[in-house]
Structure formats: C-alpha cells, structure tokens
Amino acid sequence: MTSLQRSLFVPFSVNEMYCMVNDVEQYPKFLPWCSAAKVLASDITHMKAMLSISKGGFKHDFSTINTLKENEYITIDLLNGPFTEFSGGWRFTAADSGSVVELELEFEFDGLILGAALSLASEVVVDTLVDAFKKGHIKFMKVDRLSIEVVAAFPRQSYTVKLDVPVGTSVRNAIERSCILDNFKLPTHMLSYGIFGEQCALDALLSDGDRVEIYRQLEVDPKVRRRQRASQKSD
Image (cartoon, rainbow, N blue to C red; front, top):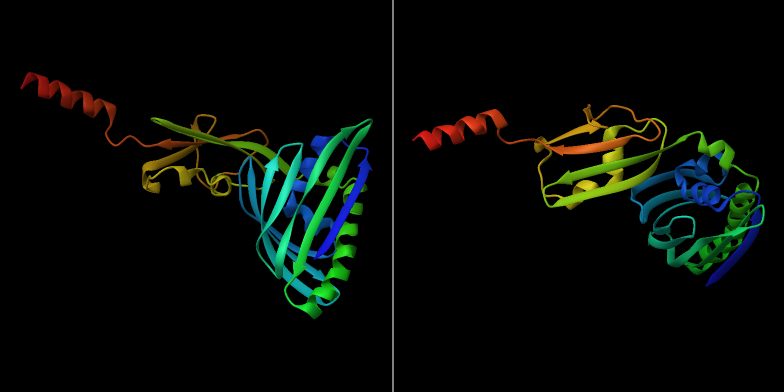
C-alpha cells in the first residue's frame, strides 16, 4: 500500500481552493499528465468523475465517487480503475492571508510489477498536482465557470441542485449533470423547461447565475377543465 500526504499554504481563500480542486474538468488544461477529465454526475454533495492519466509510457483511466462538503473537504473513493485499493481526500482550512490545503491518498495498484512502477510515478503526479494549485491556477480557471441552479417543483415534491459548470453548458447538460429527474417518475414528454420563468429550448446556453426550471405540463387545459365541470353540474 502506498500512502502520500501533502500539505501547503496558499495565498487564496478556502472557497477559491475548494472550487479549484473540485473543478476536475479543467485539469487537462494545466496538468501535463492528465489527458482527459469528465464529470459523470454531480450535485451539491457528491460527484462522479473520470480521469485519464498518462505518465512515463503508462496510460490509465479511473473513476471515483467524491463526497463534497463545500469549503471543508472532498473525500475520494474508487469506482473503477487499475487499483485494488484507493481512497483519500482533500481538506481546506482557513489561515491568515490564505488557506492550508491538505491532500492524503492511500492506494495499491493491481499487479506487483505495474504497482511498483506506478507507485513511483504517482509521487510525481501528486507533486505536480499540488504545485499547480499552489501557483494559483484558480485565476485561469474561474473565468471558464458558471454558478447555476436546477430546480424541479411538482406537487408534494421539490428539489434544488446547485452546480458549478463550464461556460457553454446548455439547459440539457445542466439537467443531466444535476441528476434531478432521477427523483421523479415522469416521462420526458410531460415536461417543459425554462430559465427564471421563461420557457426555453433544451439547447439554450446558460449564463452565470441562471436558474434552470423544470415544469410538469398540464394534462388538460384549465379552460377546458372548467367547461367540463360546468357541464357536469348542469347535467
């Protein structure tokens, strides 16, 4: 089992560092060993993500489920990848003129020879990751992000999911990433969508601060229903 611990002071706030570490889809832009990154699902407390790591002739994909406590910690647990064991996380603590960021990882690779080689490479990967964050890539990354909400409010059920998403995210992308419709048993043809009360198409692009709203379409027009009730009373 390989154990790695890193701790560093950075001249950025806890919130800035939390957002930067949690913004995994930006990793390929500033981490040379990260060839791809994708968020598979995300809400305010959990994220499923996939990373592709290329280092020293090795290339491996792995995915994790991350538990999120905003501005406090991100814990990481393996979903699948070239490991028999993998766990760890980030912790963020406020400090004078900045914050302290701690990273702990414990892992064991599947296979003795591969494990020995990748354990050596992993220290370089972790050190590069920590160093990149220390140099303040938050300034580069924040301009590419939007803070939005996805809201679904139906009779007896309502949900709100806050998301941090890339510029260029559509209404459809936001709804899929929020997983909010998993809470309802409704066919999609019964739903419509809007932004701040104005209906929109699923391919409409979002702006910072937008609230995506999901509506349940009425099965019967209210005017028709009133006429039906009036007719029944007259009978």
